[in-house]
Length: 217
Image (cartoon, rainbow, N blue to C red; front, side, top):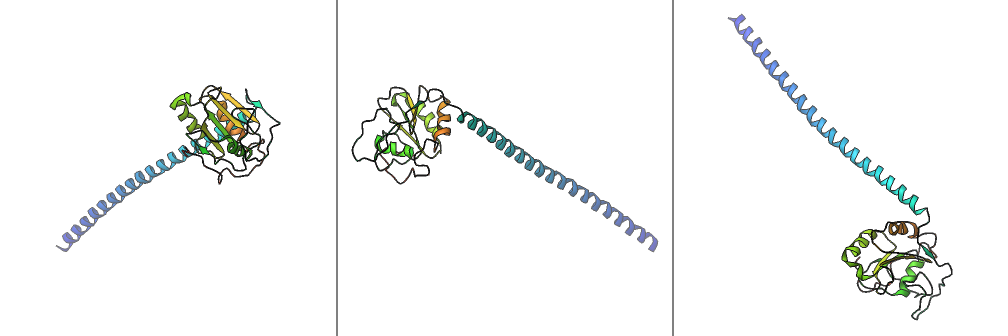
């Protein structure tokens, strides 16, 4: 009888051990699947981030390369004056690219109404690029220009009624006029001349001045 009971105990222990072994094997399999899935997700994230970084680096290189070259169609005005005056100024260029100007600059940003020449010329003296457009280009063109400006600092964007071409990009002593908001030279102009070598007062602010009516951002 004792021998039979002993055998039964051994059998139960063997079955228990087999069940426990099966459970441990199942847990190992689940853990492998879980950690394998986590690893795959991490790897996918790393690859995605790496791809974004590589693409951004490549994009930056291409933009830098384009900005290092002369931009076709730019007009240069090297002899503009730069006195501070309180009165209105008659500028030779339209829009102006420099010249005598107000002691107070226009705060950089996107404007939906025309902004004063005299203050905006001062902003260009601080390294801003001023993009102006004929309001007749339509909302689609305006939206594209707004998207082009994006979150860039040291940029003014505003309508300019009476412009002789649909769009003008101006920096101190420099101007590019184009017919379309899709013209790739506009982005290159921004890359090259925002706080570019033409800046008379590099590091000077483009905030803390005046904010004319119609500022959108």
